[in-house]
Every structure is written in C-alpha cells, then in structure tokens.
Image (cartoon, rainbow, N blue to C red; front, side, top):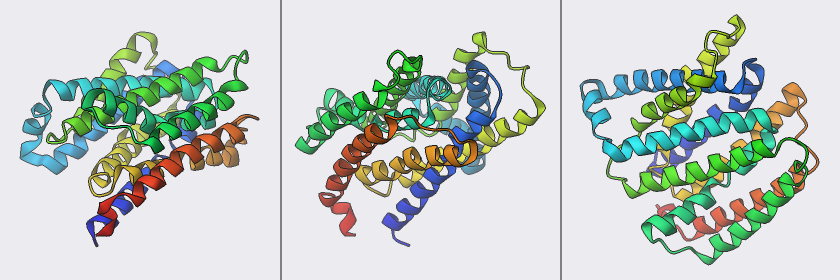
Length: 288
C-alpha cells in the first residue's frame, strides 16, 4: 500500500469513527459542563493508555518533548473541546458541525498571520463564500435563543485553526502527546461548574465509549493519516463529518437541522469543498 493510500485510509477511518460523537452527546443526559469534564478526563486517560502502549519506554520522554509550545497547543485543544460541547448542546448538530468545519479557513488565516504564508486567491474567495454561508446558516437563530451555541461553534473553529497552524509551525515535534494535556485542561475548566457524580448508570457506558475509545482512536487516526496526504485532501475528508453526523441524528433522533441549515450549509460545504478540490489539483504529492 502506498503512503498516499495509507493516508486516505487512516484519515477516512478517523472521520468515520468520530461521526457518532454528536449522537452520543445527545444521548448522554447530563449538563454541558459535566459532559465536558468527563469527556476531557476520559479522553486524556484513553490517549495516555494508547500512547503508553505505542511509545513504551519512550512515553515519558515523548511527553516531556512537547515543551512549552506543546502545552499551549494542548491548552487550545482543551478549550476547543469545552466550546464544542457547549455549542452542540446549545444549537443543532448541523449548525455546530458546519460552523466547526470552517476551521480550515481560520487555519489559512492564522498561517498568514503567524507563518507569513501567502493566501491564495481561491482561499480568499472560499473565505467570502464561507462567510456568506455562515450568515445564512445562523440567520434563523437570531432572536431564537441558539446564537450562543453558534458563536461557541465559531470559537471552536477558530481554536482548531490556530491549534493546527501551531502544530504545522512546529512540525518537527510530535505533538500527539499534547492532546493528553488538552483533555486535562478541558476537565479542569469544566470542573468548577460540573457535577461529576451526577451521572446516570446507563450514561457511564456511553461516556466510556466516547472518552476512552472513540475520541482517542479518531484523533490518532486523523493525526497519523494527515502525515501522508495533502492538507486539502484532509479538509475534504473532514467535511464528511459535517454531512454524516447530522444525517445520523436525523435518522436516530429525528433532529431537524432547521430551515436555514440546508441553504447555508450547502454554501459553506461548497466553498470549503471547491477550495480543497482546487488545492488537490495543485498538489504534487498526488502524483506519486
């Protein structure tokens, strides 16, 4: 199997593994802060166990190797988890995932600001298209009590864009261990507002599946897979979650995405998808 095929397979699997995430959040009957606490703590434990098995005797050295920048990346990731949980529990899953999918646009903006990378014309056009789509998407929520969830999703997208920009800027360091610190940050931020003991017995299993297995596996697959394929291709694959997760919620829980989700989401996905597809045409890595 070629490196490119390996990257496609691993990244696709990572996206598919995370698709039920929104559904599990809906099924778990706890408040947002308690959910964020257990999500952060259990994902940190799950990642620590997985990386300890992979790194073995090098585990401690790899953890220390992330340095101060790794701690910053972990903190940003942890805050992004908090804003994501708040978003998906205070607006529709469709709105949350479509808005979060704009993280690649924030990544391009932060790459220009922090790494002086030139913004391609196609990216600038995609940014304008994405902005128009977001305005259409959230128009139905203005005055409807869900704007805080939409803004939280936008904060998640911005934090994700900044996080992955910093990871690229320090690509010589394995930043996967930073995700453990990120989970700890999520738990610490949520702890003062949460009630960790107030979890129903049936929810314990769902929390364990989410935190100990699904999240660590999904992010590990995406992080490793992204090393073998172009960033534009990763962006295209990640868009699958924004399409499949709301569909799963509609099939299982009959959650309607809202009247503005379809037109707004179509504009957002078209802008991001066309930008990524054009980027693939210009990527020499696909010629392998």
